[in-house]
Image (cartoon, rainbow, N blue to C red):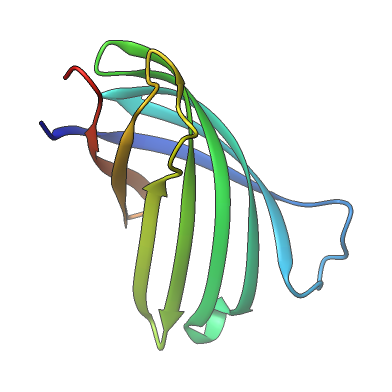
Length: 131
């Protein structure tokens, strides 16, 4: 059975100090706080290229989420792949197969992210064994 989790998250991206400011690909260290049906934190690494100011760019990222989902606690990894072409965005965020541990072992799913007026929202469609 598929379940849905909804909520918001706060994100902070910090340029990776081990590479220069204008490095290609760019590297950001990610810290997030999830609120709502998924409560927890994450840390990750994002690689970027392109020119966001001109409306075309891309990124990939992996983040490790630790928290509580559907009354179960544990951690899992999310894999991001995103592009923006002339201002049109495409984004895929999926649970990395085999990455979930603790009470979230066996978790699978996809996350949709929306940004509205600078606020980040998520919709997480997921499955858990024994759900």
